[in-house]
Structure formats: C-alpha cells, structure tokens
Length: 162
Image 1 (spheres, one colour):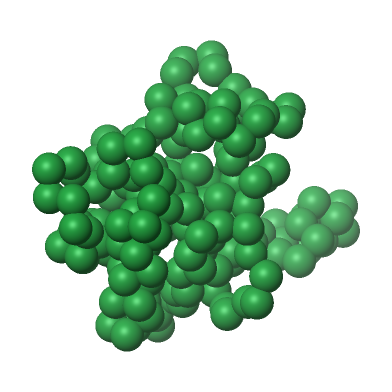
Image 2 (spheres, rainbow, N blue to C red):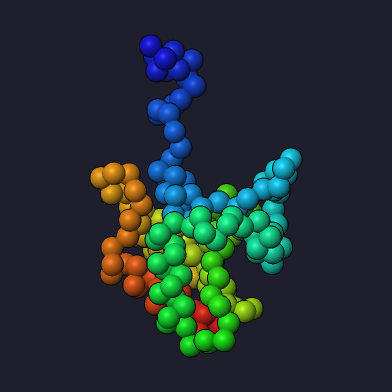
C-alpha cells in the first residue's frame, strides 16, 4: 500500500533508496563528517581548497571499511618512502568529488594519489587511479584480489613518482 501511494505521488521515480554508485562509494570510502549545523559546500571550490576541506572533514579512521583498510596497508607496503605514513581521505559528495572527479585520495607527506571508485571499468576519469568494486550476494562491497592489488600498485606508483 505504501509503495503504491509513493508511486501514485511519484515520490520515488524508480523505487526507494539511493543509486548503486553513490551507495557503493559511501559503503567503501565512507563520507566526510560535518560539524553540527554545518552543510556540505555546494558551490565550486578550486582543487587546492577542495583538498584542504576534505582533509579537515574526515571520519574516524577506525570506522573505515575493511576494503579500504586492506588497500591502505597494501599501498603503504609498496611505497618507497618508509618515513612518512600513507593516509586515506574520503571525498564522497564534496566539491572535490562533484567538480574534480575525485572520490578519495591517498596522501604521503605532500604527495597525493587520487581515486575514482566505480562499479564498472571506464576509459575516461579525472582521478589518477580507477578502483572497481561490486556488491556481493549479501549486498557487501567487494573487489577481486587482482583488482585490489592492481589498484594498490597504481596508487603506490603515483605516490612514488610524485
């Protein structure tokens, strides 16, 4: 009955929920944390300012998905700089994501490697690295071992070159 009511009122055009792409981005990468009464900036931000905003609005590192924890560990093991830690930053839904095509980035010191997360391979993306993931039969985000390793290598290569 409720679904019929929503359909009649066109409240959901294609069913309840959010798009799979946005859902998997938040599930894998997390989302920046806003302070009380703070809103996500909607206006354009220059790349440098968007990166700075993202750095200041990160969720607790312990709440990261297993996939990201695993990926960050792999990236750190592949980086040649052993003096500075590899850090992960989510940018989902921020001006860095919306205007610059960066869903997340890894940083080591002043160097960064940007990531675009997708459920399918694509030829064109703005970030340094494309990470592909999917939902398993339980609705959990997963990546193949090969894809995870290739992503870690590409991120580490970017950090090592910078």
